[in-house]
Every structure is written in C-alpha cells, then in structure tokens.
Length: 192
Image (cartoon, rainbow, N blue to C red; front, top):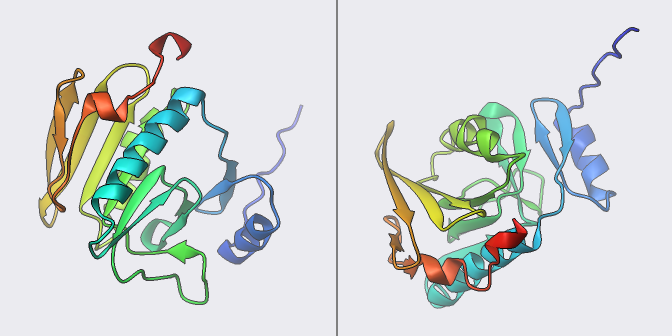
C-alpha cells in the first residue's frame, strides 16, 4: 500500500472552503482539521464561563466571544476557534476580512481528550506569538480543575492551578474572579 500525499492548502483556499462549510475547521500551516462538536459538559463549561465574563464585562471596553469566532495567528499560520476569547476594544480584524480577529487578550480552552496535548503545547506556543495575548485558561471537563497562565513581561509567564468547587480563579489582565463551582454549574462528571 502506498500512502497518499498530504494536500496542503493556502490560507486563501482554507478561508474559501470555510465560508461555504457547515462545519468548523482549524487551519494549521497548510493542513485543515475538522473541529468536532463538544460534549454536553464541554458546552456547559464553555457557556458558563462565557456568560460570567460577558456579564461582568458588559459595560467595560472588552468584547467576549464564544466558540464560533475565528482568530488568525500569522507567525504560526494558524486559524483557530477558541472556546472563549476576550478582546480589549477595539477589535482588530485580519486585513481584508470581516470575520477573523487578530488581537485576543484572553483565551480559554475547555480541554477534551483529543485536544488537551495540543491546547497546552503547540497551540499555547502559537497564541504566545500574538502581541496582545496576555492570559490563557485551560479548563478540565473531567473534574474541577483549571490551569491558568498569565504574562508578566515579554517571554515570562506565571502558572497557577485551581482545584475544587471553592477555589477562585482570578484573572490578571482584567478585574474578574469566579468560583470553580460557577464554571462547573450543572456539569455531570459521570457523563465525561
């Protein structure tokens, strides 16, 4: 048997395909990957975190996005769809696009078995190439556990972890705190 040659796409080809697609896809340096649908727990966690952030920041100069908002990471040639993203106003868009943000301040990813290594490894490395990016939150969906990274100066990040329902996640780049029990409201760990 002979392996088929991998097809590589230009960013323009990817965007054309993505506009006409019913599914979401991420683009990583020429390759296209389907973004699978989340579990009920994944969606509950994402929704809870988004809703709390969106409510808290409603009268402040920030925009909060969930799931379907694409970002472009030019230094790594990646288009991605973070689970939750905060942008400090004004939103900056990729040149020539009306649907692709380039200036995230905060990104949160809800970890799944299929993406957790990528989210913590190469994806985090890619996000760090974005000048405006200051904070990264990784939320486990199998137990009440959150990993938090925030930038203190160029090339220096501080790591914190939170576990248990009474733990409080405190963000550094904006005034926002939330108990883990609020992030995990109505999550059934038996369904994980």
